[in-house]
Image 1 (cartoon, one colour):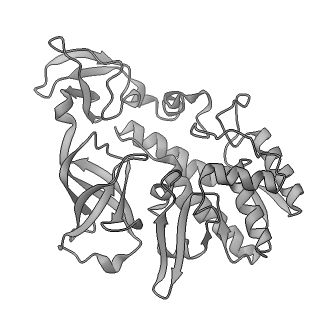
Image 2 (cartoon, helix red, strand yellow):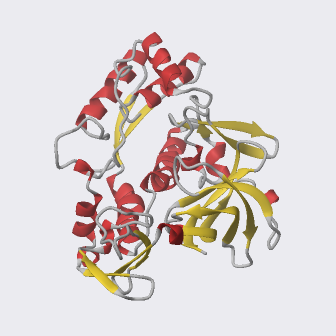
Length: 351
């Protein structure tokens, strides 16, 4: 229970369905600034979670997961930006904290499941769990694509078929104090919205000045650290020959930002590692599998073929070129003809 409306309604629906529900709020970092409207995980959120649990008449605990969160999420976040990648901290949190450390705690309590307020659908069948996208209005299956089948087997998603408006209707029905609370949008540990401050404090070498160059190596400007850039970015870059340029590659080893024309952002394929296959029976090494691939949150899944390589990595070839494929981002794989999630992987590089 993060203190928001989604997890509170998830708890309420489970209790209404006859489950014995325990509310858990994870303390994952120590805020250094006061709360603001679009942040989460602060003291006010803990209080909102406690008040919602009291209305539902369920036990509520605040657990200290700071060490696990720092190692699994914040350190990885800083390492990725320092190496020129664009990380997915919420995906890491789902994998290693919510369905990792928290699941271990749940099992020690004797709990059969961990439930969250994500908008995605789960079906349990004889051949294991099947994960599907939520509604078109509200879908968060992308962020769950790297959960292993064993993790999905102990996950409950009560809001799977809802949109946000329906969730708020239920929140009012249960008289929850967070029924009208606005959604958090910032990364929880990035207070003030500037992630560069976090990364610079943890990896100061990534904030040193360097050169901005064209693909041919011509120096056209300087930057204040690779951590301030991501593939596809246009803001803050010099124009070349009077035309706008975009970040096409980040070379952390040379501490350079490579910029090019917009058409140079397009790529027809990618290589990915950290492969997780929810439906591994669909993938035979060396054989292309028709899929739809989603290369960033809120993008549209694109028709592609995914091939599991001999080294365990994944090659994804698109039917049409994709714009701004960013190393470090999650690529989620969907069945070509349905909303089923087949798995996910971390983008290594665009081809």
